Image 1 (spheres, rainbow, N blue to C red):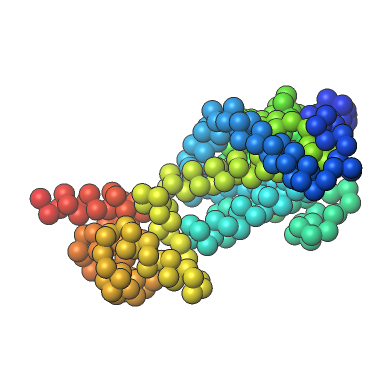
Image 2 (cartoon, one colour; image 1 turned 90 degrees about the horizontal axis):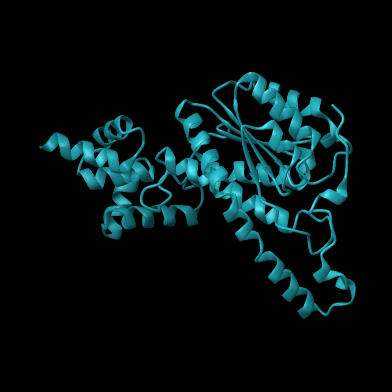
Length: 307
């Protein structure tokens, strides 16, 4: 399928009347107008909340079936997907394969443009084929323009396989919206620098991706209260943060948190359950397993058994 290109119909490509004299503005004028334009992004995302909510529910359901989340995009859109996927590992303690970011042209496209890659629907399909996409998975196609062939090819293949599909575009009535079960559209308006979709469009996409991954992780028990209880303590700062999270979750003192942290083999969530239930690590882990990783449910199970 060949896609027609009509940039005049895309708000991401139209000229912003507030920045027609961008090249002659003072630094103060430039910073002021750019800040003002950035403030239009959040309201655009707000309008898309119903679709975002549906996407979070679909991703959560997939995770509960041991499915995976794939972000697929080109250029800035692809890079943002790769970034969000990479951040899930240290933040939520997920295996790298659980959330994956695919970018047209492969990982070298993170820093160097790969000519023509985004124009290939076939490449979008084969990239997902290589990951052995299944009906348990979710594919989120990201394209600021809303028409990237690479993304459309990936979404069409995902639909064929039976995977859940979500599109994320920064233009209204986007082409990719017609290739997904759930269509998220966040048209933030013309860019300060005409056509530079790494600006407002990129910000809008980042806000939405933050919501998708974080919301789904909350839905599978990766969060207790508002604490990242599956954080991976891979450096000194994160070790300190881990112990602090244990204290905040349980109200215990520093020494107790440190002792439980080590007794739990540095697993924050397990340490919290050990303290809240006053149980050794083996029993606390059993409670967590029965509660599917939810701390509050594990604690409730412990209290029920005491009764």
